[in-house]
Image (cartoon, rainbow, N blue to C red; front, side, top):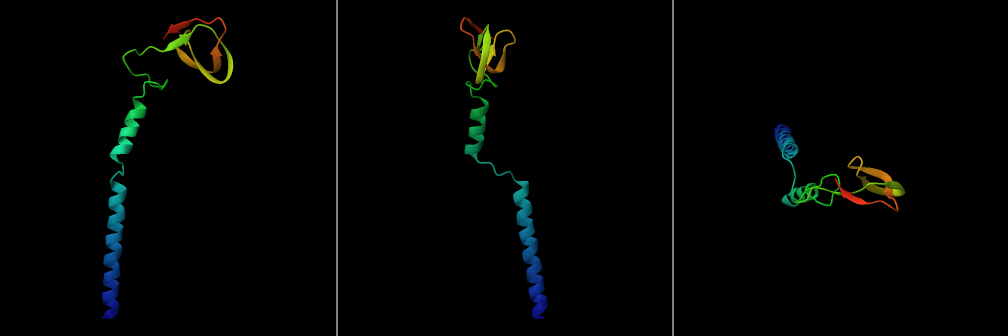
Length: 95
C-alpha cells in the first residue's frame, strides 16, 4: 500500500513538472524593456543599414580611396564601400 501511494505521488509530481516545462517552452519570455530596446535599435537614424528620419538621404562622396577598417558611402552606387575613405579632393553629395 505504501509503495503504491509513493508511486502515485511520484507520477503526479512528474506530470506536474512536465506540464510546467511545457508551459514555459510555449510562452515567450520577453520583457517590455527588451522589446523597447529592439525597437530603438531598429529605428536608429544613425544606423547606416536602416536610415530613418525626416531626411532619409545620406552624405556620400564622389571619389574614394583605400582606408583600412573604414566604410564610406559612395555616390556612384549610393552604397557603403568597405575599407574605403573619401579621397583628398572628394566632394560631398547626397544619396
